[in-house]
Image (tube, rainbow over all chains, first blue to last red; front, side, top):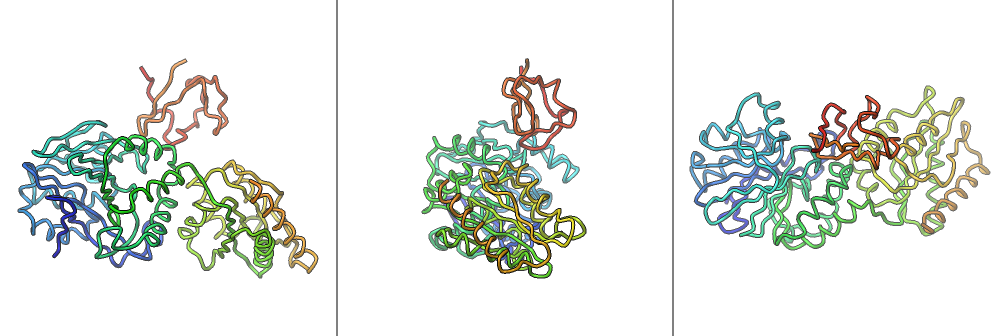
Length: 393
Length: 53
């Protein structure tokens, strides 16, 4: 029971990483999988591999189906080590296998493994006949690395898009309808927000390229395979790639002695009075990768930091560095914070919001040391005005 | 004026459009882009661009 046949003669042979919680800064509280696929035809093809420490698991699954020395081709859709990490080891078992990859894929794999791996370069649109089936390769640069490509098999209406449409979920279930839409949507949106968000234009191009294809199964390289919720996930990807948001606000802050926290709660009160749905995220208790999941649906993002040593708190600085790299667009921003002297933090936050080309409907507020009752009321009033701005947009 | 393609990610710099998000006005030839200009998609430098034939 170690192999799963996802289509006639096409098997999932991946690895399940039940324990991983930290993925280059991304909190993977449900673990993840690295999905590899074995296609049994006149030629035998392995599509992608697994992270190095799960090689034995992949090998066990392959051996239940075929002697690995019979593998003719290995498709490397993406260089990153969670998918290429077992390439060298599987090539020891399949020494005659040719590695099909993009030009950037070859360059990247050479830099990773310092070895020529029987590469055969495929251009976008190239095909490979393996008997009853023909594999089609389509390059999808910057979704999410320059080397990325997807593999499509018309006979099986099967798309193997590598990281696109992935989610970090460790599970013995392989298919979407066995897990349920709500969990999948949350994990797919977290994945998009943390990995794919900067490349909305490239996603749109990729979606255009795929729109003409007959697809009834999407099998990504992480998590669960889509077969029932394909229209729903395509709809979400379209929204996310167009930077479409909801009338929601997100307040992200950290505090030293509680004053910036008080301001955050008053902004929440004001926004709520305008019937805006608000998420309040304290950077001391929330992981930045989880906050990104809120960013993806929030039209307005309010960020607060006190001033420490003439600048932002390091926690807020780290969040903004991460946010700036992920480039969410078409947002409204607002900065706030308490200070003792100097008070530079609010300006530093606004600077980054401007670099992101967000609209700033109101100038940020700073309050000296500890806000009094009147000042807190004025903060709440600003929250109400921002709520109006948000609902009018 | 020639278009230039990023050999890393495939982005095409079109001088008639410029790169307003990076402060490059329409009508700016590739040769006149500042040395520290980078591909707006993947961040590669000017040396990774080739003239589109």
